[in-house]
Amino acid sequence: MGIKWKAIRYMIFSMMAFAAMNFVVKYLESYSAWQIAFFRAGGTLFITVPIILRKRISIWGNERKLLIARAIVGTSSLLLYFLAIKMMPLGTCVTFRYMSPIFAALFALWILREEILPLQWIFFFTSMAGVALIKGFDPSLSILGMTFAIISGALSGLVVVIIRKIGDRDDPVVIVNYFMMICTIVGLLGSINSWVQPAGIDWIMLGLLGFLGFLGQYFMTIAAQMETTDVVAPMKYIEIPFTILIGMTFFGESYAWMSVVGFMLIIIGLIANVIYKSKLMRN
Image (cartoon, rainbow, N blue to C red):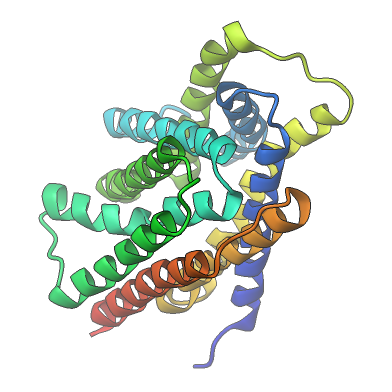
């Protein structure tokens, strides 16, 4: 069977939505990461709760301890990501966070006792070399922002492992809803002392956070249902050039050529790992 191009289009729509969300976060620079997380999660709740009610499934789920753990880890990852966006160029921040598959594999090795094959280590080191290249040729890059972005990616990788432990014992919408509920509460509590009252177009931008996040997840889910992992998963990384283009166009960001080479090494290592794992699963 040939590639389902409709699935490719859905993945492109998904990554455009996530890239647009990155733009909104960067645009809302006067708002704290806590407040942005509150609106991001709260906006999505307006979508997930009605879906759960329509499906007539329990909002509390079955694997409650794992659901809470997933939500706490996911919330921490999201907050660190929003903090990193405020400290670094958009493209650099997104690229570092997308290293989550490396951390997911390491966590799976430790928690699920899954094997990491020698060729995968080569792919991982290729990506890590890209990180070193970016930092080495951009001395102005924020060490703290870089640390936040990489830790965010590590926590995002841990989220993948927790979701796999939950398995099919809970509906995907319930898993997302737990994340959004806890993130909304944490975001609200954290922003109390730094709350900025939105005005004018900011209300629209803050409202877009939840909508764009859900839209990106929705289109990505449809694509994953229509096409195999080795085709769909590498498409996630087109968010990086989309976001780099947004940063250069709207925020005047620029990158040294060696930093671009670093981006390419990271992406090549990650995509190679996805394709390699997908082929192993087929055999």
